[in-house]
Image 1 (cartoon, helix red, strand yellow):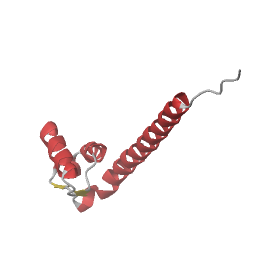
Image 2: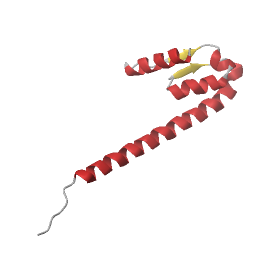
Image 3: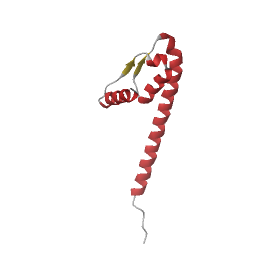
Image 4: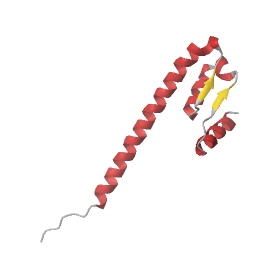
Amino acid sequence: VKAAISHAIKGAHRNGKEIGFCGQAPSDKPEFAGFLVDLGIDSISLTPDSVFKALEIVSKAEMKRSIEKELNGAISAKTNEKDMTQDTPKKISA
C-alpha cells in the first residue's frame, strides 16, 4: 500500500498536480502522516481528535524535509562550483 501511495504522489507531482490524502490512517497512526510528508504529500485530512498529535509529527517531518532540501542544494552548489574551477585554464608563464 505504501508503495502505491508513493507512486501516486510522485506521479501527481511529475504531472504538476497537487495530491492529498483523505482517510483514517493518518488519524489513527500519526506516524503515517509523517510518512506522507516525507513523500511530499500536499495535504492530509485528519479527524479533529488527532490533529494535535499529528501536527507535532508533521511539523518534524516538514522540518526534516526542509533541512534535507537545503543540504542538497548546498551540496549541488558546491559541486557545481568545484566543477567550474576545474575547467578554468591555468595561467602559464614563460
